[in-house]
Length: 120
Image (cartoon, rainbow, N blue to C red):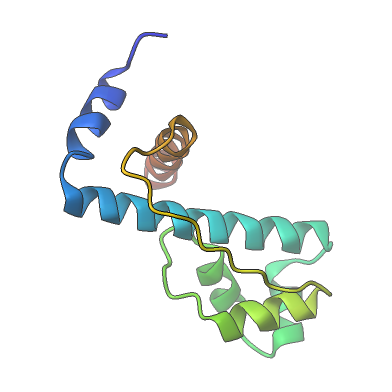
């Protein structure tokens, strides 16, 4: 498959260690946010209902489910999981010098969604 302009640009940017580190952190936040939203939806709860269970605000739940939010604490993740009868499991994986195609695909999807959200 032919590389898009975005693919070429991303490859160039990833050569910068600072950018690569920020890119990796953004992907991690993206994964946490998607897992939280998916878990809540599978549990049949709205953000407001989950917030009520946690004695917090709907805005806090929205923040936790935001792909841009990087302030997730283990204690809050435990509270959210417990409210839906789940446990939190944290995994540590070795750092890879080359980001996978799947990670790059997530980045493209993330950027596309951000552009759609900004446009609406």
